[in-house]
Length: 312
Image 1 (cartoon, rainbow, N blue to C red):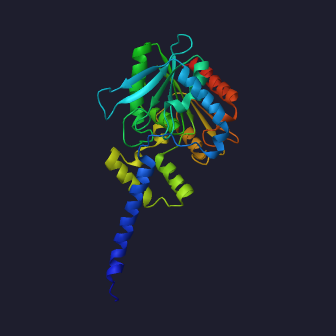
Image 2 (tube, helix red, strand yellow):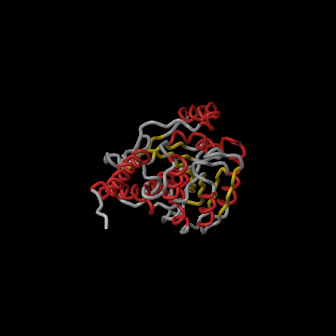
Image 3 (cartoon, helix red, strand yellow):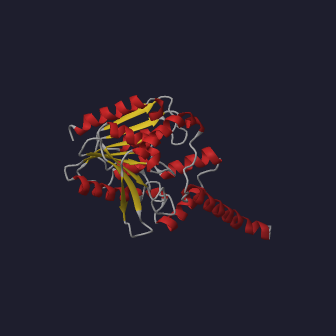
């Protein structure tokens, strides 16, 4: 039997070490906080003028800054509250996307404001003005949002009517919230372009953007995440949370989404146990459904809310 050389014996260890080093870089690239808003994708640059119109509205509209854990520098969370144009018991919490903040959701804030809602726009952990070093893709955020819900109820009363809305990572955050014990004031949920699980999403993007396989990278990134944030990526599933949901939920997804494939919308739709609607928007890329036709989008949202807030 031929004896193995030192190089042959060392090869598996070298490969494992290289895979771990690459996974550490991947983790930092995807999960580490950045203190700027990345430029939007090229396909949505054409909406820049309209987007900044909404941002100007957001900056000028009167709002209140709300803070959770103000004296805890590691867990301090910030949100902006926009009162409805007329006193209202109806409030929407809007959950933003990956590496964004509350301000980038100005268009959705104006949509709900025009429908007569108070609007709460949190900055998630490791985003905007909130504390944190690593993005948790909605898994820890879902628990923070329970605290925001309580703050709304204390502020506006136990007769509050609350809607949860999110887009992209925010859509998944809303979906993950659905499996928690929500207060009875929460009446309906809307998730635009949310992923079915972070493992599936990360595996998809590794293959699509970096031409890398799921193994060994996703399991290694999951182990790193466990050490840094306390949970495995396999814990972060919209579908498992939706399987415990009985509230009405509207899923919105573009059929040209190459960032979060619209097949995930069907998985999420199949998982939920409550009244559900699915709107697949033809020709829309990732979170483009609003921009293709803002009036149609608002009408679709308003119809869903009218239908379910009357009966729930």
